[in-house]
Image 1 (spheres, rainbow, N blue to C red):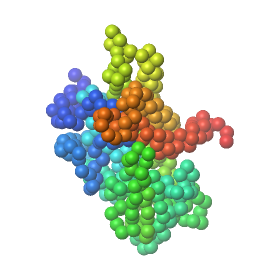
Image 2: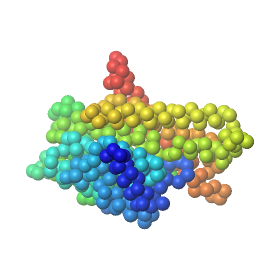
Image 3: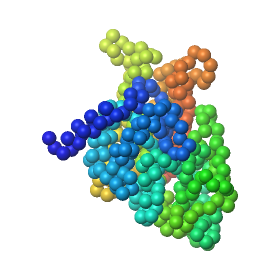
Image 4: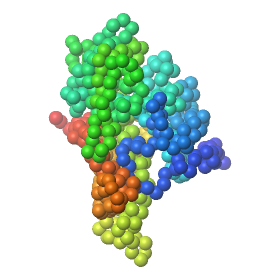
Length: 401
């Protein structure tokens, strides 16, 4: 038996023995939003199920929340091949991630690439342990698609920067402990050159958060107001006025995270199961409506294509190729695919897919209605679909302006 095969057997046995039954995906359909119903950690984290905390503690003890990160920063120090085995076995056993969030998927990878040693030692271990939850302060009321137009100001005062301004669409800012953000640190330089990337403690005077109510009735997005908030000069990542380079690197991780999250968020057979339940099956067990079978088959093939493309990219990453402009392809395709999927689920459920409140509907049916509405935001968050298409045209295909 090879070393990797032995490792696989060990992982399989450990997961089977240690992943609580309630921490395994069931047969429910729908997803209210990116990462909803999963553990994000942080000081404000309140587990909906006691097993969430148990599962997190067990995975943290193995350092498998960040299996490839170096051990000195709290990670598992495993190879990419070993990490893939863990992911494969978790999917096989339908184990939910023990920890998700912007710490593991966005700011953590950026710190590993561009942070100094003090910054890595300060922030990475607590990310691995799920002790701090992060949010992102990029967009502003006047700087969304034109991200380089940020106007939140950071003025140096001794060992600190004093920050004033407003951020918008800061996902889960009301639940976050820290924020990574873009600020204008030099108004004399061209707009792309006068930006810095900073880390700010949300639990300080001068930082206030207001949720933004969406059509789905939920508020994953927030406005964040900064009034004389203070950031240590030691918490500038990548150097002063080098924030645009950091922003592009982090956006690659964000778009990869979004595409992978939607790719792995549900069982490939969920649509078939829902169709059999709500539409019916023929004598051979197939979905009874031929046109619906075609739509399910097409969506399933599209999902498989995305899955294989993402796997190809992960293989390239083993050679040191980090996410680049091609991440826009994944983000665009995955979010549009999720919009199509949630719309198809509502169509399959028929009248039961349009419930909002009251009797006659199950909680899962209410969830599917909200998931369908929430999916409209997928083509806006992380950069609009129009922005992604522009990036693909210019930076991937090399087309002229």
